[in-house]
Each structure stands twice: as structure tokens, then as C-alpha cells.
Amino acid sequence: MDTIASLFSFITTPVSWVIVQFHSVYGALFGPDTGWAWGLSIVSLVILIRICLIPLFVKQIKATRAMQTLQPEMKKIQERYKNDKQRQSEEMMKLYKETGTNPLSSCLPILAQSPFFFALYHVLNSIANNDTIGVINDSLLKSAQQAHIFGAPLAAKFTDSSSDVAALEASLTTVRIVTAIMIVLMSASQFFTQRQLMTKNIDTTVKTPFMQQQKMLMYVFPVMFAVFGINFPVGVLVYWLTTNVWTMGQQMYVIRNNPTPGSKAQAEYLERLTKHVTRHDKVGKRRDRAIVKAIVAKGRDRNEFERKFINGLSKAGLAAQADGTVIKSDTAAVAQAEDGSPTTTAAGTPKRQQPKRQSKSQRQHGGPAGARTAGENEPKTSLTKADEPEDAKPAAAAKKGGAKPAGGSTRSKAQSGQRKGPQRPKSPSKK
Image 1 (cartoon, rainbow, N blue to C red):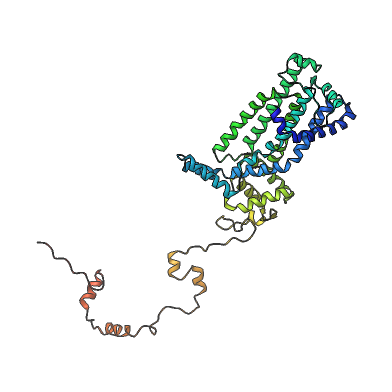
Image 2: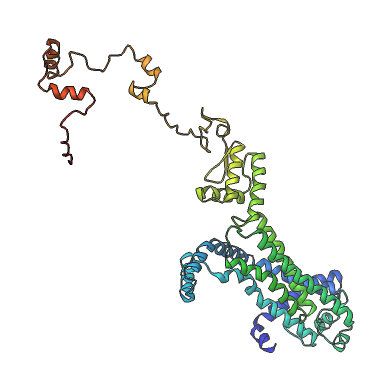
């Protein structure tokens, strides 16, 4: 522990200073030696740290979304190089580099608050050992040792002996009951947070090893918290339970208002958005407009829930625009062609009609019957006798005079059903 304390000694003094400042405020309300004053000081420290980590949390969300988007490509690489692990790793790193994705970005909030966690652990451990640390002097040290949370001293642990607990003026049974309840709540909150992510905010259309990994962490993390929790002081358990509850609420807010595409949370969100838009005929919030804009920009790449959202707007006589707004388009819902197909697009513009195919008799007579009736008085375009070619006139005169043409035999054969022109000589029959 001395090695870990030396590694995080640079932040021990700031953490102790923040706790003392909060203690001065809550001590004036509840009394300086009460568990409420010291416990709320730790809770306030957690809230302050998590507010400072909000930018990292946003980066974590973006990194997680990017990883989920890459799942189909990652699955292809794994199937292509399933017998070559080295090539598979190289292709994975190449994919991360091309897309600018870092798999470790999803762990940034946990890594960022680790120094604060170890600093707080060292501060509480020093209080249990009756050692001053940071800005906590002898008077504050004595006040912290007298503070009890539900009967358990701030620096007591589940594994402490009865003599150690008696030195802090408490009962071993009370300490173990309070610490056990806190450990169970801490593990349960961690499990529920991970389960909420797995069941609602993951694209269920893609089955990848990443999902199996997340499912495994859903059970591994609570067990780890339970194992290590028995060695945490009560103050550290308060810290970790508070940060788990904060993470759970923060994640619940993000899942509800900015879900992952293709997830169950997106289906619920788009259903709520459809009801709101159809009721008010507009997209109110800027966040909702950004999501509608992204859905419109996808075009044919929309998933099932996004297509259902666009179709729901069309049935209500609305059309989503490229800027994320919606406009009224009543003609898109009611205008129909004679054959039942829609005559307008989703944006309300006229749909291009295909010309109807004419029958064979209509094509031979120059169009439909209506066109022929309207064009009866127009000059005919067929050839008359005056327009006949000159070489056709002698043939007509010869026919009128009864003269037979030179090729009479050939003509008679053609009239009897044989093909005109030179005939292929018949092959000699084999006798």
C-alpha cells in the first residue's frame, strides 16, 4: 500500500483539501463530528469529480458508438483470418487507425478517476491508523475517527478484527452488517448498469465477440467489486457506491435521449419521437432535429426502426427534411394514381409517371382509338398511286394486259407457299 500511496501522493493533498472544505459546510449544518458531515463530504467529492469527467464520458460514448459501428467489419476480418491470429491483429489495428477509433477510450472515465479513488483510500486508511495526511490535522483526524455512518466508523473495514473496531468505538457486528449491505448495493448497481447497456443500447442485429465480451463483463465486474469491497473502508464504500449510482443515472439519461442505432432503446426513442412530431407537426428539440437529420442522410442504409419512423411520418402526412425538420405533405398520403400507386414523393413533389404500354393493334394503327378519331381529318401518310415508285408501274401495266412476267414459274411457286428468292439446292438423296 505504501508503494501505491507514493504513486498517488501528488493528488492526496488536493483530495484531502476538498473533503475538508465540504466538511466545513456540512459540519455547520449537522455538526462537525457526525457521520452526515463526513459522509456528505465524500458524496460531494464524488459529484465534483464526475462533473469534471463529463467531457471524458462524452468521449467514451463516442468511442463506444464507433466500436459498435465497426463490428461488421471486425467480424469480416475475424472470419477471413481466423487461422492467422497475427494477420488478424494487424488488420484490426489497421482498421482502428483508418477510422480513428481507440478501443481503450471506453475506459477513460474509470482510468481518470482511479487516482482520486486511491488518494481517498489512502486518506481514510491514514485516519484509521491515526496518522495525519494532507491538510487533515490532529483535530480533523479526531473528528473523522468519531464519525459513524449507520453505526459504522468511517475508517472501519469488513475484515477488521474486533480489537480494531473497538478502538474506533464501534461494534464488529454493526460494522460487518453495514459494510456487507454497502458491498451488495455496490455490486448490484454495477450489474444493473452493465445489464442496462447490454439489453437496451447495443445493436442486436450484429452478433460479434465484442458483445460476448460485454456480456462477460456484466458478471465479472460485480464479483470483482464484491471481492475487493471487503477490504475497503466504509468511506471508500460510500465513494464507490455513489459513483456507481451516478454512472447508472447518467447512462440511463444517455440511453433514453441518444440511443445507439439499431438498439432497443432507439426503437423506443423513435416511437416517442413519432408521437410527439405527429401531435405537434414539428421537431422541437435541437437534439431531436440532429437525430432526424442523421436518419434522412442515411437514405437506403436506414435500419428497421428508422424506416418505420419515416413511414410513420408519411402516414401522418409529414415529410422529414435534410435539415432535421418536418413539413406537412398531405398529398403524399392521399394522392393516388389510377392503378393505386402514389403520385407524389415523401417531400410532396409530383412523382414521375411512366407512359402506359400500347397494344399491338394500337401500335399498328398509329396509337389508341381516341388518337385515330381525333386525326381522321388529317392527311394520310400512306402511299397513293401517284406516290408509287416508277419501277412498280410497268409491273402493274403488265398485270392489266395479261402478260406474264419472266419468272412466272418462280412466282407460282411463291404463291403456293414456298419462300421467295433463290432456293437452297436439295442434297441428293441416297439411293
